[in-house]
Image 1 (cartoon, rainbow, N blue to C red):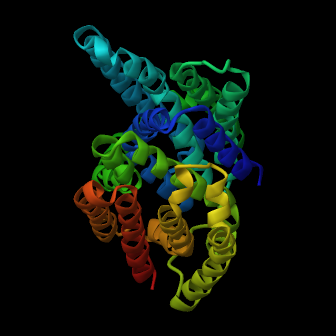
Image 2 (image 1 turned 90 degrees about the vertical axis):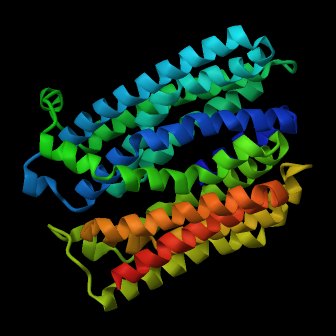
Length: 393
């Protein structure tokens, strides 16, 4: 409840202190930091989730904490290199295109936040795989609290850049909190984590590159298309609806545990028989509906909190809540797919979902704006979760 409240409060504060056009620019910065970090860490995240959920440490002899340190180090190297490249490009544009100076100053903190966002997101997904979802929620607290403090303490005429730096400081705190929680959940000697990662592990991680990139496209494709082709106002409207719908994600610990106790308690998870899968899906359907249906009923009142022009995006918000509902319903099947790990079928499921998302957004954004992006997100969720349920049965 606290995480959901902070998420809505931070979004409300941003859209009330900034004009819709400024909010659109600000949320484009979110796409830079969060979207790029998703692509950078994707293959590490997927391999790590499979490793933790499948109890692979008992087979390989490498504790999950050691592998987490090794993969986090490599991921940080990638994100730091990309951050450096973007900083060079930004400095070059600042000299050659002075008219972009204000926008570049706004995006600079989001670029610098890239390694921090990548780190706390990777650790957060590892905690989610271990059913310690509270860790990723606590990390999100830091970013939202930082934005709220900036809005409360900043003078009325504060520039957009100040709020960007507030986001950066929040990601630094979030990364520190995520490291502390991960050290507690996955204890391992630091000396072991400094050892070089095995070649077999690297090959296994690299084999998931396509699935990771497709998953990143599935998650961030709509926002990227909007950020490039849509006006700043539509970008802001979609981002507000998406951040509000994302509050369902704060309640997913219940969905993690629902109907999955057989998988969680097993020493080595195995394929669940169809009756067990159906029971898990029925439990997920119940809990997902309990979370999402009240939000659907309160959709008009919720969007009214943000005022004009955000209150008009009822269709977009309802569609994005549908995405959350479908993801909750398919969660047991997705976890079972990770345990079984049929790479070809998983690649087909996620790849086809990503293609559908990008095509629908690219073809519809010019005419339908944020609604097309929401329809694309919903289509991708239906494809991926539907195929996951089919695989689990």
